[in-house]
Length: 132
Image (cartoon, rainbow, N blue to C red; front, side, top):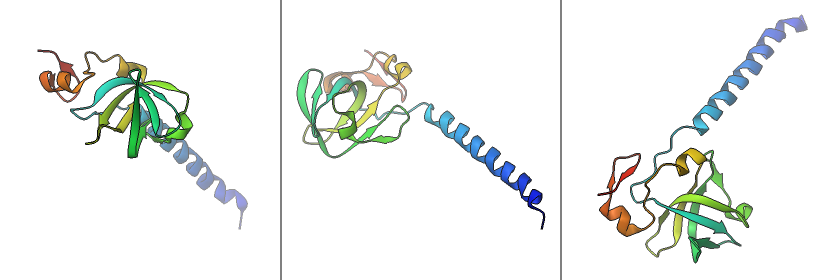
């Protein structure tokens, strides 16, 4: 058997892997849809579960999900000492439950509510907010 017969197969595998990697990168930059009651804030991560939210002490809930700028899950311990602009939701105990570390273009979307009162009184269209 000639070993050269396998070269086209290998080349196809390399090209296919490169295309998949490119598609994954494009998907990572896709528009993320945030839930209606996701609020905007600035979080500084301490030693889990401690964080500072908008300059006030806060806690991460058990089972907190933190999504990075590429929408992949992040571990809170790896973010210790870092400060991020985020969209977030709270659990029923008032602890941070879902956090999205925002990319620059996402953080630039304004207005975005920073309190539950603002979220209740503003209009949400699925992508952004309108003040009354």
